[in-house]
Image (cartoon, rainbow, N blue to C red; front, side, top):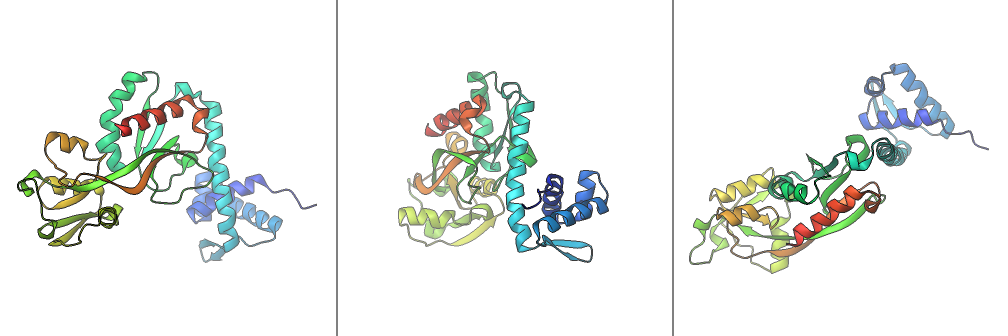
Length: 288
């Protein structure tokens, strides 16, 4: 019979793998470097494999270490969420929502008052972040994400809405209800590099344009469009306020680009009334 796995050593390994350093892991765990090193050596001896390649003061995961880290990261993240749920009654604590920065700023936060009016017993704490999410480590309950990356198969994912995109610009660039993209600067964003190509694929529009300008964040490209610097590719959810105020116009309307928004959770959404209520509200709001 194989020897039992040392659970403490698994925890030490997980922290050291995440930080890429035994010294930093010791600091986070409030232990000595030697204690961390001994626990990881014990784990390696128990498994019969080398988990770290040690080079001077730096450590690097071996293929076996990468495989084990994938398992420990998900296991400890899930455990952290379960413990947090048991320790804090869900109805008494804010729902921590991770949301992509632009949609948080342009769509979600302006609608929080409606959520509070309809659900006064639930508080939302919005964290602006995009891409992969570490629920347990960062104290996140749910994450609103577009499916432009692969998330963990263990996550519970519920579709909220299809994405809708279209060119947006300052009204001054539109003449008699029309705009010639071949004469315009196209505004791009590093966070959605394929936005224009997705729109062209969906509409079969010609690729002619007068030039390109790229911004680091999505909201910066929208700000530039509002300033009349060119035409940006906008999400219908992120430009509603600007369309309503007349700062931006969408001369071609909006089309589905094949992507969609999902609410991700490490626990079943229907197991927590806060999660279930928030999902239903999101779906209703985006449907409007």
